[in-house]
Structure formats: structure tokens, C-alpha cells
Length: 121
Picture 1: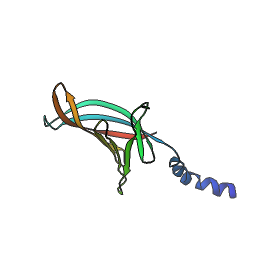
Picture 2: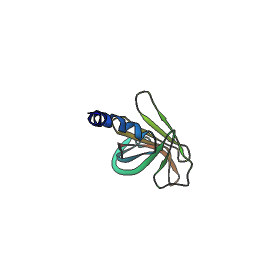
Picture 3: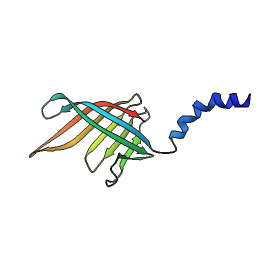
Picture 4: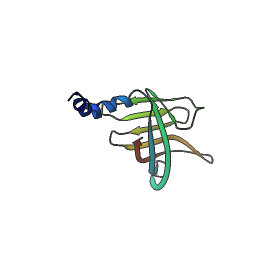
């Protein structure tokens, strides 16, 4: 009987285990909107974001400084990459927005925003 009772509560304990280590989000963005062009196009931007406590990094990037991470009261995860001037927001339902405050295209500076989803591994 004790085994059955422990097994019944095991699924409730598993999310707490995720807090003990890094969590990886696979992000896939499908739409890019340019503020300077006031237009959106279908395009692909994919990356994995490894979140560990209050910092994050792009998977495979061991050289850049960690990004600052904050989670809002509404459950939105915010990762700010100061070095690349980007901000990634992941909602509790996986809806995500990735914003670049500065993109250099030739000699033209422009801001852009991508929308898509991020799924926890």
C-alpha cells in the first residue's frame, strides 16, 4: 500500500526535479517583422536556449557571457542577451517572441522581431 501511495505522488514530484538543473528550450520562429519596413515575412530562425537559474546561454555557445534571465509573475521567461542586443520572451504556453534591437544589414541599422514557439526538452 505504501508503494502505491508513493507511486501516486511521483508525477507531482517530477517538476521539482527540473528546478535542480538546467532546462533547455528548443525555439522555432517562423515569422520576422521588421519595424523599419513595417512588414512581416515568413522565415526560419531556430536555436536552443539553455536556462540555468537566473542565467541562460545558447546551446553550444560556451564563449559568450551568460544572458540575464527573469521570470515574471505571469510565468513569462525573459532572457536578455546584452552582447547581441536581443531579448527572448517565452510564455507559459510556449508562445515566444525574439527581438533584436540592432541588426546591421550593410550600412543600415534596423530592429526586427520574430514570433514562434519554444518547447522545453
